[in-house]
Length: 113
Length: 117
Image (tube, rainbow over all chains, first blue to last red; front, side, top):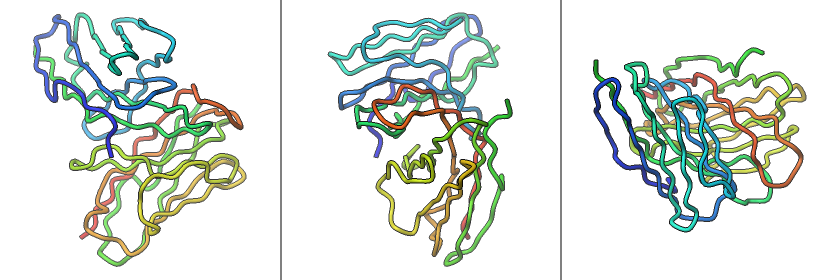
């Protein structure tokens, strides 16, 4: 079952605007990762933030993590039409080894010209 | 480096049949994980293999099984297919160490889309 929920489920914005997606999870984690998926294809890793980090940047992406609220947000600045995709957060628990990622429900982002 | 490859990309089977999906990880990666993606259940973890041993397992029935070979390539098998097994099956590889908390990025393949009629 999905550990987390993502909000909003769908987001439609104009090119050049910023897009913010939120993710909530339920258990303690080792790290949280964000992935992008285009039209039912494979997942592309975007960024990883560890449980002892609060904010991380990568290009036009900014991720924040609040472990006290068990939530994370992904900000895409100056969005482009090519950013149109589904975005998923995924958490890795402190399960003592292993790579079991638990995914959120995803946000469908549409960037219009 | 070449990315994660999965074969076949598309597969159509009928109920009751069995199917084998293949995944070749990135060279040097020893961990291979499998996920099922459906519109209703989203992305769900199936299992992970590391050095030919199953290291983690999700909540799927015994009809779903897998294995990993000495070259880290992995196969996933689903027996007695049901309509609900129709899904995109994704494989992911990571470098991974033998134990301890994981921080390595997982790299996903393009997936195998299985349709069960």
